[in-house]
Length: 403
Image (cartoon, rainbow, N blue to C red):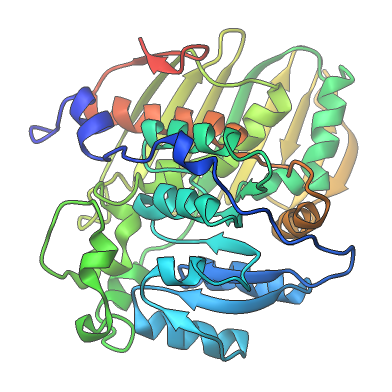
């Protein structure tokens, strides 16, 4: 931990903030869409997640009209998997300049989320942006300000559990007082990944040939480095580009905890963990955060070395418990720990994309707007800062700043 920067450097220096919200105010009006009209989408970032989101949008009736990625091999693969042949670009600005793009799916590495989203707003596009919303707290605040200055734009953050009816049912039961007052929320995500697919894939010259990658564009405002296939393929595990498991997986589970408890964030966060298996990662591969929300606590644990517990969440109230169980069922338990109701999970990823497409037509607020995505992600960012500085981080929710 001796090479850590100060909190101020981590929050300010590592991610330049250069876009004023006022510049977003001059937007071209969106194309008026009929109830059944096909939405034309441009994909920015065509890796695994980006291509998956584009597949879902296409399956739901959207038209993929253009693709952008710094890696030509990723563009090849995306076109093949999507079974399309469309204009493609290394520089996403060229895609945003097209008049036939109504909306953008932003699935770039985390350190590009903010700039692509704000540039898309300035170009008059609706945006589905993958989680995490931003790489730093300040970048998240930038996005929130910009979206407020562009009220005619639809921005959906990829916290897909917000569109799951199974979670809505849990929220409705809590609101109806079925488990009393919540005092503890426990969330977790555990996966077997003993052979690191990113490490394996980094050596694949077909996908990570430096001759086919605009490395300078990939780096953007991140520190300048010579080409590194591992960083290019496994960027999630390097502080320059992302926040590791805490901000990659955390937004999903912390989002559920925030939504069901109706909280806007913690008053303090502590975090611990380490690198116990993937020694090539800068970010921890086993990490645990405790968020003090005033009247209850949220505990989030994530590791990619053992998948026995899978993923889940439990809400412990004074009168009962609601749990997402490892068998895929949700159950409501009474005070005697007897299961009194159960229900199944649904495909919330597809429902979330459908909600975005519906909102592109109706111009209504989507299920996971930017403000919500920022509140949810702040706890994960504070956890990373706590881990790196080795101390508790106190947070002023109203002022949106570290105390």
